[in-house]
Length: 349
Image (cartoon, rainbow, N blue to C red; front, side, top):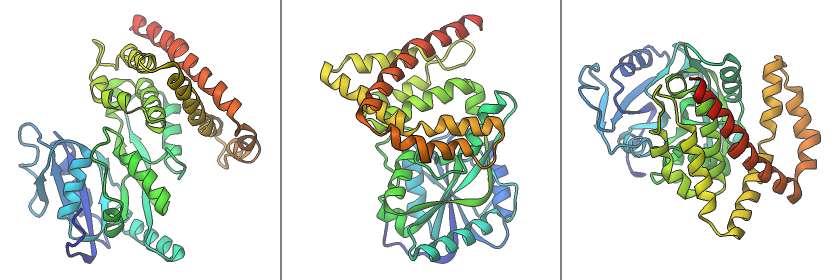
């Protein structure tokens, strides 16, 4: 990162990676320019779009070209930024409130003052812009974005951060495929703190609607588990797995399950058992999500079931036997139950 570049204290640099976003960008730029009480620099990092994705953008928007890949594009935008603070947004984001960014900067400054340093980063709560899909699943995913727990913060929620801290962290890891947001979220948590910014950021649900909402949700869960257990071989195959589609355009879950199974079989028995244990430990550490899901489904605003898990159940579950059993049950659930369920769904469609 270019740590020596001059910055303007009152300028917020908005960094937007783009690839074939000709429809989304004009709306987002218009909304950014409508923001009040904030001085913005808008940077579009284009990763080699087809056609004329940026030719019709209004004057005053900085457009740069970068190698394809969100981490590469966002780092390139950050290197050209002149603001003291950076805000990373996806191109399909929507800002309905003209005071959203001004309120976010004020909240960040307050949190930094309370912490006594600038190692505070902020993210927004999400609302999905959707036309179909299971309402409860979207409601759960939206509610989860208000939390600051590990694994609940992703790039769709935006990232507001001091430029100097972003540079000290080394920026986005360009070696990480499709999980650069989770990677930097973990590094921010280890070195400082997260806050949920006031207001809501809207994002498109097109990926869920096109590929199948439940399918994408399950695939994301598998990716997260593999990332936290060090399965780089599976993660390297993720971009190709995203392209394995059925005739109706949905994700081909059988190809994903096969890759998951083959990744396990390719290892010696001892390493397979170790992976079972690590997956179990990851699943156990995320058992809170089942309780939170029930809170959301029942409309329990204070989340009493989540509180019960954290205070009473979580301490009891922290032992190796639970991790080993959780790992075995996870493999049974993924490779038998879920696999058979998706076979049935594919035959129905």
